[in-house]
Amino acid sequence: MSSDDIPNTPSRPARRGFLKAGAALGASLGAASGLAKAAEAKHHAMATDPMLAVEPFYGEHQGGIVTPQQAHTYVAAFDLTTTSRDDVINLLRKWTESAAQMTQGRPAASLDGTGDDHPAPDSGDVLGLGPAGLTVTFGFGPGLFTSQEKDRYGLASKRPAALVDLPRFNGDQLIAQKTGGDLFVQACASDAQVAFHAVRQLARQGYGILNMRWGQAGFLSGPRGQTPRNLMGFKDGTNNPPTTDPKAMNQFVWATATDAPWMQGGTYTVVRRIRITLEHWDQMELGFQEQVFGRRKYSGAPIGQKKEFDNVDLDAQDKDGNPLIPENSHVRLSNRASNDGAQILRRSYSYNDSTNFYIERWPPWRQETEYDAGLIFIAHQGDPRTGFIPINERLAKFDMMNQFTTHVGSAIFACPPGAKPGSFIGAELFNA
Ligand code: HEM
Image (cartoon, rainbow, N blue to C red; front, side, top):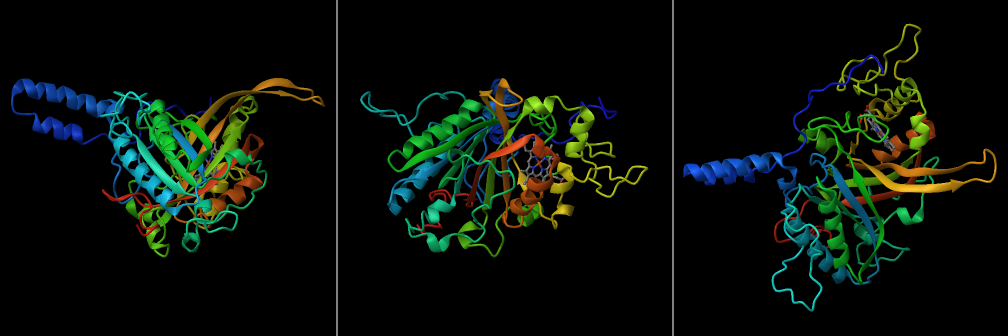
């Protein structure tokens, strides 16, 4: 174990925001003392039970972008099969209404009056579970605007310049079935079933209009108030721009002022499915693992520093004049100082998709079962041309971590601003 110690006390404010409704409820029930006690108990439950947390759906921005990261996600991308613009608009209307309902802990659509002879509009598998801090985030892929050079929905001229096709990066091993997509849905919640349920209800509403292209469950838990660790055992998210600072979010995360009016308040989201060879990583010495990242494993501090949130000092040297944070370390290569000041907001999740059996009939003749696990890397930014793309170009070429990671899936989406009550996600794009 390195000299730095594992800190036990939360170093940041609690990650989760809990519903003010708890407070409101407590206040309104305060008259009689019996009622007050009941209210207090309920308020306490709402303030501490993550299953009762509620995140707002409507607003200037969509939820799930700067929302404190919930422990679970289900992300999915869809290919549109319809040729009708109205179908797409109607679907987005339905999606907006259902997502708003589900984030409040209600079924995707009212179950009242569902006859025995009809499929119910909600699968029912999370009835009574609570909202669990659910957020649902929608995005539009390049294929919504132009597909095989066809302007399917009259939107080609509205494709934002920042919604570029991602270039091929060094070492990319992309699997077509895990790459791309015309529409994106990200559901995040403190419960895995609640997150999956949300995407499943929305997917079924698109029957006959779209096909699911890929879906992926993810998880990431940390002690409350602390940065969670990814499967490599390192704290992940430490040096993100602060989500509580609107100025930083405007500078790095929300679409730029010169972007299309319908994208104001939105962001561009890059998703990469990155497989990690955990078996290989687990054989590496602790000191080497720390060199790979440029940070201490247990404390999360940059090498040469003491605490997790200490400054990443790229100029720091050892007594022989060698850089303390290695030239090819992940943190040096991705730091803003190495990328013309570029910053992105990472909100990634680990994934674990069971195992694969490999058999190789050439040296070194191996037969083994390996985890199919890694990171669903999710990054939000105002413009991928100055955010993810240049940073990943540098990482793909030089990052020491590449010995352990392979990018197997990739997608980019324009996530529009939040919907206004009564309207729907992307309404301004469709002028509807
Ligand atoms: C399996 C893949 C990856 C893992 C396990 C990983 C893990 C980490 C860890 C542990 C840190 C240090 C703590 C922190 O500041 O959050 C970090 C920092 C960072 N990573 Fe990654 N990362 C991965 C892929 C990527 C990719 C693909 C990009 C972008 C193209 C990226 C961009 C960054 C940035 C910008 C930082 C902050 C660096 C700084 O300013 O100090 N990472 N990552």
